[in-house]
Amino acid sequence: MLQYYGRLPINNDLHLLLSTSTYATAAPTLGSQWASHMLKNANAVTEAWFLAGLRAHGAETNHITINFRVAGWPNAFSEHLTDVANSPGTGNVLDIDKQDEQVFSNP
Amino acid sequence: MCLLSIWLAVSLPANAQTFDKFTVDNPIVYWTASTNQLNAELWVYKVYPQEFSINGVNHLLKAGGFTNRIINQKQGISVVNSSNTCKIVVNPQLGIIQYWNEYAAANRWDKSTHIHEAVTGLPRQKEIDGLGLKLLKRFGIEKSDLAKKENGHLITFGENRTRSYFDRKTQKYVDDEVFMRGIIFNRRIDGVNFAGIGIGSGCQIDFGNNGNIARFNLVWRNLQPYQKYKTKTPDEIKQSILNGESSLTHKNFVNGLDVKTITITEYSPLYMGADDNETPQFCSPFGKIEAVANTGTTNVEIELYCPILSTNIIVSPLRHAR
Image (cartoon, rainbow over all chains, first blue to last red; front, side, top):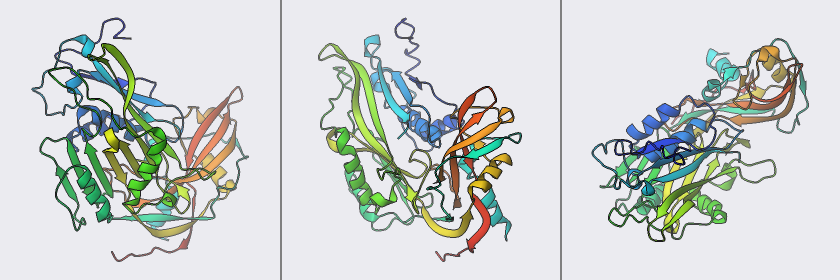
């Protein structure tokens, strides 16, 4: 929707936008899981977000399908928390990518 | 009987306690569920450090392009390549293995041409089960160790990582292209499945280009029988609900105090795992209950987690000299 209306906040300052592309149930440990994967396990920011989604919702055994989404500049998808000096590889909005992963579903 | 034994029986496993207690005001509880899943007795397991297969760990090291090999992993290992794009962590104390190879999947993007790496040789969906089971076998994990449905089919969760981007080469927008494909298996012990999606106890495996392993997260703790308990009868489980001992999951919410009748439609025992950064001492079973709660005006399908062990121990605590 943001992209449709030309309001994507991804710019030189915001490399990646982390969210969901579906409804998501409340997951109290999502934030701590995300931080833990970035800091303790040194995962890339994107990877840490998907892993956090899997773990935070993993204890449930039913319900809905939850997809997590990351949108941003192509070279930012592999950025770690320590990559503070990186700049987006392109300023062309056409290059903004997105990645999706299903983090919860019924078997 | 020691307090620990009583506590193990009457309390829900820690991860099941994250849900709110389901407090009710004396509703009528009906049991219409099949009793096939009622086990007469179940073990509580004690968690010990795991000894992972050296063959399996060496396979991961080779897959990641590491030249070192291990002959013993009791102390665990943690290695990362110089570009910080591939790493392996083996932690026997936590009972986990984590492997991540960032460039096993088509993750590269050329800064000069702005062209994405092509997806080549990605395993097809129907191949994923077999590839995953083959990898697990290297760690001594057999199909019989994995959660299954009543019809005998494995409980698995398919995983696809997709990407959407503008392809400079073809000048076309590529939508939802699968570039990483995988599967999650849950663990099973004594014929009882573990709850949730395999990362609390089980395995997550993802493959990238040419079937290379992109991600392998194994949570497989060394569980040794500790105490065997008699399990609750349907009447005792109903009483547990009335006593407010169960928790209401996020399936649907209802105010327990408004509920007039509860009809239990499905029941299954499950073990609860723990996240890969947790160090649980015990692994206990609990009951998952599907039910219809009637408030007098509406029916709500709810799910409850309920303690299912009676305080009646069949086998006294075992002491394992490890």
